[in-house]
Amino acid sequence: MPVQTEFVLGTVCSVNLFEKGSSKIYAEIFSRLHELDSILSANTDTSNLAAINAGAGIKPIKAAPETLIVLKEALLYSQKTDGLFDPTVGSLVKTWNIGTDYAAVPSPEKINKALSLIDYRKVIINDEEGTVFLTLKGMKLDLGAVAKGYAADEVIRIIAKHGIQRAIVDLGGNVYAYGDKAPGTDWTIGIRDPETQQGNAIISIKVKNKSVVTSGIYERFFEENGKKYHHILNTKTGYPEDNELMSVSIITSVSILADALSTSTFLLGTEKGLSLIEKTSNTEAIFIDKNKKIRVSSGLKDKIQILDESYILSDE
Image 1: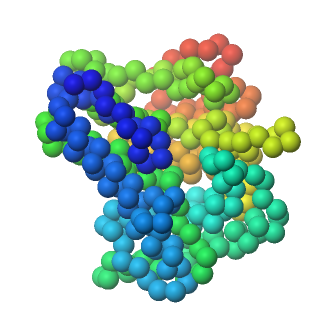
Image 2: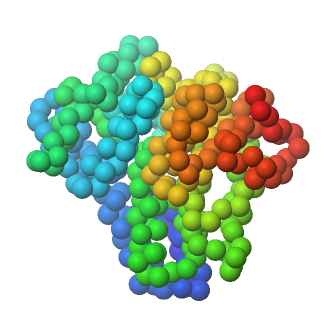
C-alpha cells in the first residue's frame, strides 16, 4: 500500500511502510496516533491534559500513563534549561494564540499574568496515585513540544513489532527514518531553508534508525505591524524567542528526546545549546542562524552536505 496520510496531532501526519504496508497495520498506527491526540491535546476540552488543566489549583487529577511519560520528559528539560523550556507554558500559548485565526500581540498585562502561571516546579506528580496536580489556579500544561516525539516513538514501536524492515514516519516535520532505505543504504534527509515558506532543502544528511526534528521560526507565525512573531515562546520574557537562531535540527534515535531538545536548544541559543548537545549521548544538532551560518555538533563534522552556497559552515 502507498504512503498513508491523516490529519492528527494538529498536523498532517504521513507514514510510509513501502512494500510491507497493509491496511491493518496502517489502521493500527493511526488509531494509536488518534488515541494519543485524545490524551495529550492542549486544544480540546476532552483530553486527559485538559482535565489536569481544569483541576489546576483545585485537586490532583488522574493522569494517563502516556501523560506521565511525556510530562516527565518535559520536566527533565525544564531542569536542564533552568525553566526556559517549561511545559506549564500553556497559559502563555493561549494568550498569544499563534497558529490560530486569533493570533495577536497581547497586552503587557496579559503577558505578565500568563508569566505568573509558568513554573515547572509547581507541577506535583504522585506516582503512587498516578496523579498530576498543578498548584496554581489557571496554570496550564502544554505538551506540544514533546507530544509528537513520543507519538513518533510509538509508531516506530508498532512498526518494529510487525517486523517491518524500513519505513519513513513524518509527523508534521518530525521525521523518523527507520531501517535501511535499501540494503546497506542510509536515508537522505533534507533540512529546509528556514528563511523561506517553500522550504527547499539547504542541507542533506544520511541517517538510519534516527529521528530528525527541527524547531524554527518558519513553522508557525503571524505578522503584525510588519513584524513577524513565531511560536517558540520565551518563558522568561513572555515573547517569541528573539536570539540569533532561525532553526535547530536534532538527530537522535529517540524522537521524544529530539523533540524536547529542538525547542530547548533553540531557546538556549547556539553556544549553550551546543554545550547541552555535547553532553547528550548519541545525539547531534545543526544550528542555523540569521547570518546564514551553520554550526554543527562534533559528531556531524564532515557528515552534512550543504546544498545552498549562501549558507556557510562555521566553527564560531
